[in-house]
Figure (cartoon, rainbow, N blue to C red):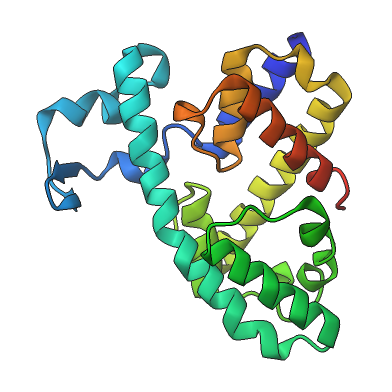
Length: 220
């Protein structure tokens, strides 16, 4: 348990996964038409207080809001992947990535083998970290609740650091074992990695986290 708590503390320092800094200076207005920028008073606790001071209902509401920000970048990320498919030299990888994008757009959950089969695509041109276009790096940053408002070199460096830290956390968690985590720790771990775990049962969260770790620990 001690190791897991150290991991979550480290994630909180690096990830800003629950209270992203660049959102503190903005305010949301939730109306019937959806999300819009404004300044309703009831959201001030989200901006001015750390998560430990949120009420249980506020925790659910605010995490839903942050996840809505993340989801806004998902279509951009998939669209970019589709655009660079013709630039991939290997025909087999081109077919696999096309199939993966299609499955995701249809709402299907890709299998672990489908994802791992594409790891070579993200090590070289055009999807290697050093080759990514600036707007794609910004979309990935928003998906991880990192500020996109930095010069491209700093943005790329921060994204790489954030990904590296999560990978290190994954390796530590795999050694510790998911079974050692409390329900709250499991949900926090899932949320940090992109899953909105606020409305998902503990068993499903543990399954999802286990699949994530199998993928992450298979990568360099």
